[in-house]
View (cartoon, rainbow, N blue to C red):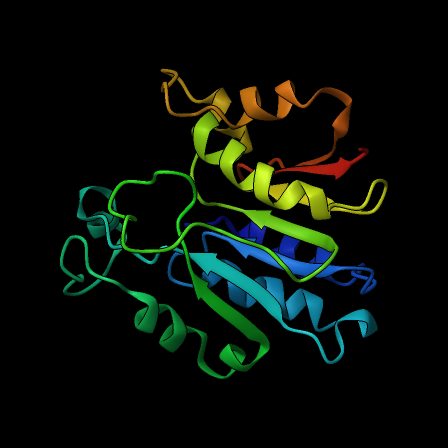
Length: 201
């Protein structure tokens, strides 16, 4: 569900990782983004000895996931973490996977809320929901670990505000706009939905 340009971008961006903080992904779904993120990070000496921290509730939502899945999909509400990990192949050794929920996400009640105790965050990939409430939930948890002038936040669904007709759940731009000067837009892809921000504090 990510474009070819987004795949290339993830591989390009990772090489600038310095190791000044952790690399984190929220909402990997079946792992395609994770594979490209890790491939990019592995090009950086700063990632040596580190792993990508990956968080999701891993709850299958048949209403929209079935249409993007080839074969027999998991049952609605089932945990698909094992499917995600299987898709990573050997790359699974380069990630730390934790099941959690972001805010009050539907079907995610069985997963504990997102927490973070691993120090500063340098690079953060977000694809865990488009609503203002979900984005605000992860921000309140992770932003205290952001480093001004260093932390880069990649918003996978940021450009969905351009979709016509507009959908009420596409609130990622409203969320980033509400942060004012704290989040500075630095990259906007042509062939995808990504908007990337530098945390200014």
